[in-house]
Length: 374
Length: 123
Image (cartoon, rainbow over all chains, first blue to last red):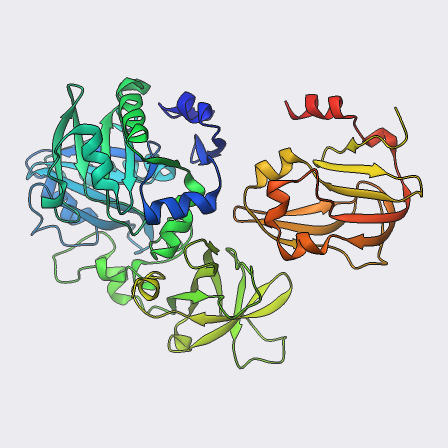
């Protein structure tokens, strides 16, 4: 069965193209994906990401438990601050990437990927029982939704919609509790687009859409433009942010990907620590641009990568594309690739697109946008 | 049913015969709307023989890659170079822009739908 978002009817009214994703009927695009990406880069995009999972971890040893089941160091986390991290199994393989929010020392909101809700919940639950941590984990996904408001004018749109929220005073990864329509919401300076913006965690008790409709309609009226998962995927690729099932999965460890820095070996024992300490990574994650390939070439997930000095056309691939698409912001194809570590310093590769090999240039820097913003 | 009536396939293509026995074909408005921003078209070479139902080209949008299936048999007479060079014109006018014209076209009426049948099919 596919679940419906609280805002399902509103999305359909807006002519959204809906498709199943992670068990939900999700808006893929409303108008043109290209325009939705541009709107988010130039003004404000609205994203209904209410499919995401929300857990609450509460109790005296909540923080101690968190410190044990995530790979990053949470000891210095303060109230009102969020952190990006990963869950690993004992083999050091990635079960999910998550963001958790410290509401209080003994109270955390954990946001997980929609497709991993059940897996993550069982995994954490088992650990809590095994180690007898004095805390309780609740899967409250059915009662929460998320609207992401992203783009250079997103703070204006937010404050025109809901009054002075003092967004400028908040730093990235800070969050606070606010009341909208009499309901408790969490307003977080997080996002998945590489733009400034916020995410609103709103109450959607059992799919109640009233608060969601109020938020969405107000944001739209004040200039926010609905954007779908299609745009969200391209925005996160441009910003070089990983997506579970692509850059990270149970096939890799955090050390094999771009976000390896989340692992903290200084802290005491944590799930997967031993395996990760023994792990010699064979892979590296690179950004590739198809700027020099024929116009409109797109390297999609699974496309094979070959050494640029390989002219024989029959040798083994040295890597593959994990995510790729046409960048509306840059006007050419971009991709994230997993490549054998020994080729880490190469400047370019061949990538196989539509049975032909095209030049893919390695992009340095934090993401695909740094060059553009200069 | 007049001989030159525009007909439609389950693969969301339109086809129209002319007096000389050639057929022009393209994709429907419904198809372009589902695909979203089209950024690449791969069309067959002029002179290639097509068999009804075979994949003869590719249409790639920002969102996905789809094959084009020949709605009839025939020999490729002409392709729409404007559409190859600026695929976005398919988004703005899918049913006014042909993709391929074939000569010696052989249509199989049984797999083709009239406009009203196609509209029902899309519902």
